[in-house]
Length: 102
Image (cartoon, rainbow, N blue to C red; front, top):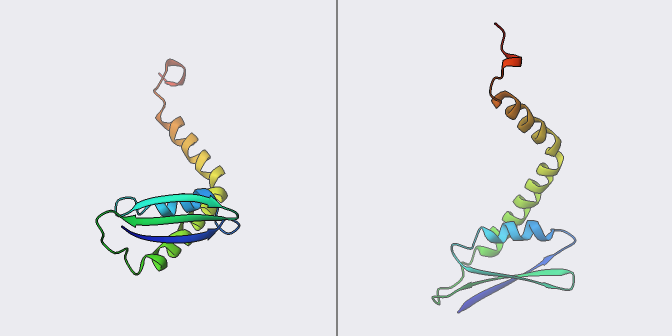
């Protein structure tokens, strides 16, 4: 079984960010995460003795950055997202006698 380990500094990337980035690979590899001190260790392994892709480290690093940015955007736009959902739900409410003009 081919296995690659990546040590991710938890002060740079939150656990949820790492989990989201690692999850992208669950269709290709077996993915295992564990905490060791101030790091999260992410292990990618292939059951069928196929080598783990040589470009995985660079791609996983890009995915970590991508998920970190997505988390920041989610945090910064949370209020706007709630207002948009509220407005959409208000528009979708069925008509009642009190709001129908005759």
